[in-house]
Image (cartoon, rainbow, N blue to C red; front, side, top):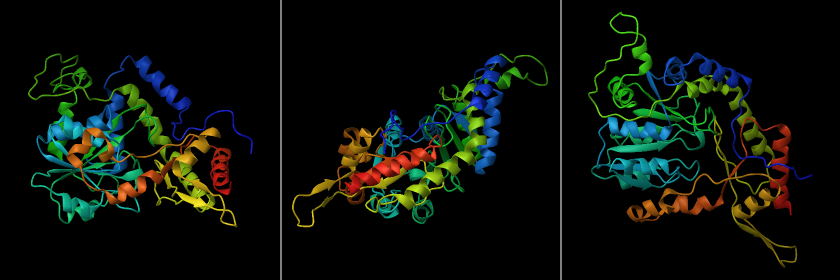
Length: 381
């Protein structure tokens, strides 16, 4: 097969004229900040995921931070799965908390309930449950023995049926390569009215939104310029420019998920047997395969070539196929290693075999065939 001239990305967004027109309308409206588009997006997103309340924010990371601040978490122990992006472990540090890293389940790389139970501390008042690659974390099992506050990290699971319903709140991501991207942005969803009110007021320095005050006050038309500030707040609110993109991406989400699942099915059916398939994901935020390192020999047992994850990464890069690794375990980072110096038998035995293959709605069937051909060719050779 001829090597393509351009790089096939492992992840990328897919937009079109609909997003361009939505942005044009916002720009021409003269209201670029937090306004009617954000309010519309919050309402429609809450309905989609079955939550009572939704607050749109600048990123999922800021959403997690706002929740921790609204709950008054400070100086506590926060439990994190080691297979996660560094943000989930750093945000507790922003709040003078400790990050307690636990191992993951072998089959789906989600947080391991037994290791949570073994690692619980007296002040383990918060737990981050990441739905790894869109596969639901075992929150029900954890609830059997843990009564602390659970933040369900749904960054990979927009939209897996039932996602966001197991934790005390959920934090969603619309970052540039997520299933429903707008460049960057996030959403907090919850059924807890008190938590909703707190995070909503904290998104802009404790000030009510300019849009709400522009609608008048006490039945009077005009701009209500006066306001009071009773709480410490931050600048974490989403703006209409981003919400406009999200609203269009929400309409396209079912089709984009169909494409991701089509890619998942093709990989599962046609990749060489040495590639270990991941468990089924509704969102396929990442297609995380495993390449065990092994040595092949000639019939006379002479010579031999070692196949490995890193070897496949380099091989595919030469064919203009971009891959990645999701994720390097959190306990491998210097900022977290000292406080989490222990063995992580599952993560340590698996992560060096992980490879994320291209999976996004912009891929064509020819792109899928191209990836499958060169992955299989690596093992054949």
